[in-house]
Image (cartoon, rainbow, N blue to C red):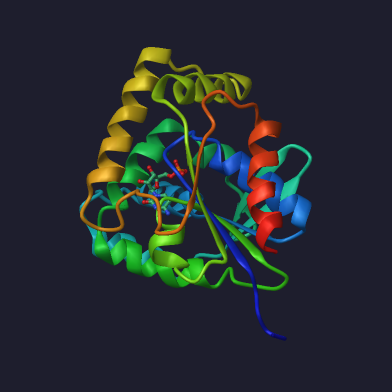
Amino acid sequence: MANYIPIVTIDGPTCSGKGTISRLLARDLDWNLLDSGALYRILALRAKENSILPDDYESISYLTKGLNARFILDREGECVLLNNQDVTSKIRQEDCGILASKLAQFKEVREALHVIQRSFILPPGLVADGRDMGTIVFPEALIKIFLEANTEVRAVRRHKQLKEKGINVSLPDLSREISERDIADRNRSLSPLKPADGSYYLDSSDLTVSQTLEKVKEFVENII
Ligand code: C5P
């Protein structure tokens, strides 16, 4: 099939490791990367900067017009460019994550981002990470993976990541925020976080990054 573009989706809760694994996989395969959570965070950032309230979903959907996001992979990790400006550290702030999760509950916002997400299907292939990549956005994906880790492990991972970036948040606060975001993401009526039918399930709580990547590559190499 000359025009066939393979897609691997990696869904899972906050800090399950899906972002890191998606980046490493995309880099190793030399495929495109879609960090869909970053798109929700970018919208949150734009809403915050324009003083738009979270429930004004019409204005927020409007903010997706002309939104040009790109994910660049480099030695340091992922660089998120919004209209060619580096917004990586701004969108990683916890307040952007919390607001992103609120905006993600609106149909208009999800529909506006759906189109943008589909535009990432480009040769030679796509690795897409998020909450509904395998269930809603890329139902045709060749390989669907659901990556989990327990809440304590995820809070510790996130705490370490933030500390390395000079951002100080207390571990109990972080753990509570992660749990609250999980509850919202798993229980919302639209595109709730859940494993897609036929997905590979992987719990990374006791695995290192390289062990997790190895397992994910086994799934991929079995099929590609
Ligand atoms: O993955 P990340 O933590 O960056 O995502 C931020 C928020 O965006 C999530 O808590 C979730 O509510 C929302 N999101 C979503 N669907 C996606 C990706 C992210 O609803 N595909």
